Image 1: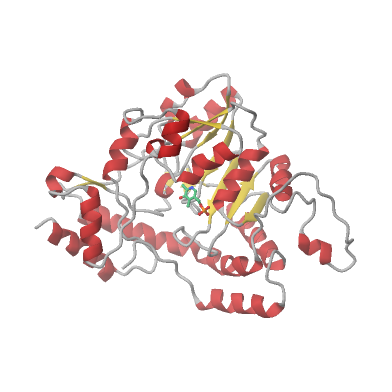
Image 2 (image 1 turned 90 degrees about the vertical axis):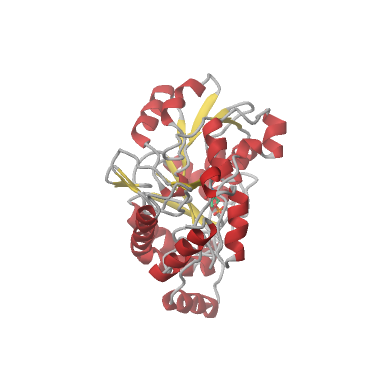
Length: 379
Ligand SMILES: *Cc1c(COP(=O)(O)O)cnc(C)c1O
């Protein structure tokens, strides 16, 4: 059993086949349909489909026009892409430790990290749990900062009754197979700022100011203008064919994820071997992309890495999301980060594990995970 598995239905397969047979497989009408469906679902005016969320973070940060030495505040408990793209866009990552209960960046600690060079904040909705956005946007407004939400794990999540993507500055979602819906690889940038949308739209395809499809449309002009040295970050119609049929299933997927997560919470609540995900007090809807308890090595009689190996031996996959980013060689060497700098993130990084969680997981699958753990812990 893997820790995650995409749920691909017959509609997705039929649409991909139809796309392949249509003669148009790269960016075209299906990408346009998928973008429109996303805009409607999210309640957002601008949705730009891309080859990945990493591409989305890169272009969103480039659209902010970071200059040499400009600082971008984010969390140490995230995927490499969050920080890599800050560096690639010319920024300097500044880290703020996490709140140990939510594993999200501690919004109360951001203000102390703001300097004259700070340009933006990149909050990560860890595991699909919305960051406390009201105080974060208040602070951003007071200091004139942009916000790029790394919502890779959080499509369908809500904060105070509003869907992520429906408000705020810029959001980036991922459609990687381990995320809440998938296009194989894929992602999108969502914004209410037409200037950001324009830059992302141009940079995603060679810096050309029009999409390939319109160029070939009836009556279209063969001419185009390169206005910037852009990238090749466009989504293909083959990918969008999957997305068009994944999106209507998203709320159902997330409901199943929530039921399974609550079942883990209930079944494991008295186990001293685990510290379970805590509650966040503001009204929200968690997208439960990941279920990430922290192992208590003394009670468990083993550390996290041993636990993961023993689960593999039982035929059960687990995931490691994430080793704190500041401890990776590039970040330690280039930015001088050291162990001890972000103790809450380090404590999570050393003990965190992602247990199997995906929409097609049955109660019996979950029972198998729980009884395998009971066996390992000799319960
Ligand atoms: C998956 C993920 C990304 C990258 O998404 P891709 O679509 O694979 O590029 C970025 N940030 C976080 C927090 C993620 O979970």
